[in-house]
Length: 95
Image (tube, rainbow, N blue to C red; front, side, top):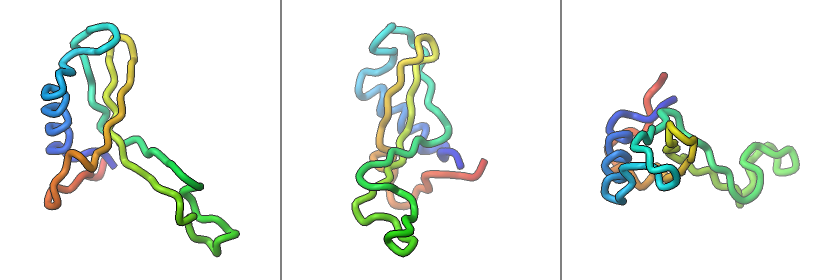
């Protein structure tokens, strides 16, 4: 899966609103938005556990993150994709 174009456009607009039109490290103006999400796992394991009867641990949480990378120096930033969608816009589309 990859991010739907409206999500990528909103991330670009958000970067401009934050003043991130260039890399905060090397100041190159080449920030790329990855088309595939990063899954950020927090809490307990985010996979089915035999000790829980094949269910995920109730304390586990998976966030879908947008990765922004400087194409010059490789600096990465992650943003929570939930902040860039309304209820009607699909977040993802198939590859």
